[in-house]
Amino acid sequence: IKKIGVLTSGGDSPGMNAAIRAVVRAGFYYDIEMYGIYRGYEGMISNDIKKLESKHITHVLERGGTFLKSARSAEFRTPEGRQIAYNNLKSHGIDALVVIGGDGSLTGAHLFYKEFGVPAIGLPGTIDNDLSGTDSTIGFDTACNTAIEAIDKIRDTATSHDRLFFVEVMGRDAGFIAINAGIGSAAAAILIPEKKMPIEHLVDKLRIRTKAKKASNIVIVAEGGKSGGATEIAALVSKHLPYYDIKVTILGHLQRGGSPSSYDRLLASKLGVSAIEGLLQGKYDVMAGLINNKVVYTPIKKAIVDDKSVDEDDFRVAKILST
Ligand code: ATP
Image 1 (cartoon, helix red, strand yellow):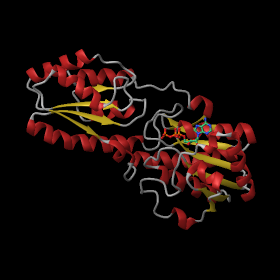
Image 2 (tube, rainbow, N blue to C red; image 1 turned 60 degrees about the horizontal axis):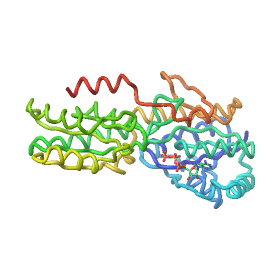
Image 3 (cartoon, rainbow, N blue to C red; image 1 turned 30 degrees about the vertical axis):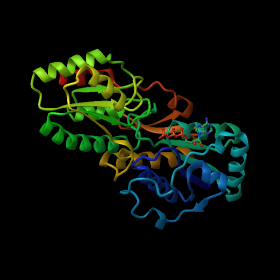
């Protein structure tokens, strides 16, 4: 392997820049020419591919977002689109790929390897933490910190006005950010897609807390819940508790931004180096992840399978602490 292309794809996450920087630095260390593929698979198809030099990765580690930009490409989902992408890669002589993104992006890398035999390694770049084969995905820790910081501020106003707040956090159909930020911000209740909580239970819980004269009530709602997001849940609860002053805050895209936390910087750096070393050792069609602080290469097909779920024990702890 002499030339490696790196791209970021799907939803951006804090730490993607740190991962690109580690991939590129490690590539240079092993005398490999490194190429940046801009806007994910879209740039592979439109041939937006540039040779990277040291100057491109100076002062990017600490910056949120991704300087290679990210996109979603419908065309890459078609065999014709992938053929164009392959031809472009070949025109640059790129012989291997590092794909940083979520499950969709890694699925693309897996297909590309199967169809054209292009060696590819995936890195888990998503705030959602919904990939198996790693304890944490790049960006998850930062997103949780951002959510907690925002919820702390909401608590100040909730306490001052005796308000009940429903705060919606991201995570797609996974409740990792919700459970993590919920425990970390002393939420009254945490609603996640993985665990159904009947609305009556939630209402009872809030009534008990009111009787106990809790200073504030904040309910964390994961965006992908089956009964809806924070707006829908708040509307249901307000029918049962009409005397409550209820407010809804949707944290939204602010959870994707910001300078990566120390943990995300370390994770991105370790995995970036592991991506290059893995490719050089012939580990293809795998995702590099960190399990118990050790780098583990998991077949992409296994990493994207939706069998990672919120730790039962986290849920138990949250329940005990909010009673
Ligand atoms: P996030 O979880 O943060 O949203 P993601 O990587 O899962 O990130 P997707 O939009 O699912 O985001 O996928 C990103 C891109 O990967 C898609 O726009 C598409 O180009 C490619 N991709 C996804 N699924 C496939 C697939 N089945 N076949 C080919 N390409 C795919």
